[in-house]
Length: 129
Image (cartoon, rainbow, N blue to C red; front, side, top):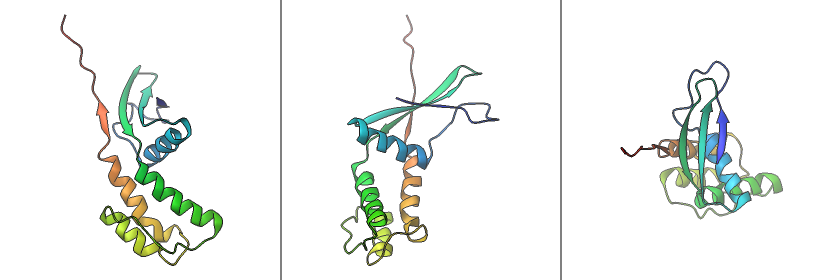
């Protein structure tokens, strides 16, 4: 479980997750060996929270590792095995023969931003007793 408290001047918990939330949660799952996490956006003044279910994305982690390794080791990406979607195809076109930069990794950011729309908010249902 990852808990985020509200941002300054925010009157309610988050209604959706951001790309940063997805990336951070995935990296935390790698560190802990987890495969799912619940991200809770908690608003202490209102004493309420929205909770989101995030699954570990091994493809996302593989792509991020490839990009990060290339940057840190200053090694050109010579081949790109990821063509699972249009974002990754474009990313491969941009990166093959280069070292990643902010400019040529835009498809990666677009892909992760698209992922935010698929993260489901957890809804709790109380049984009528």
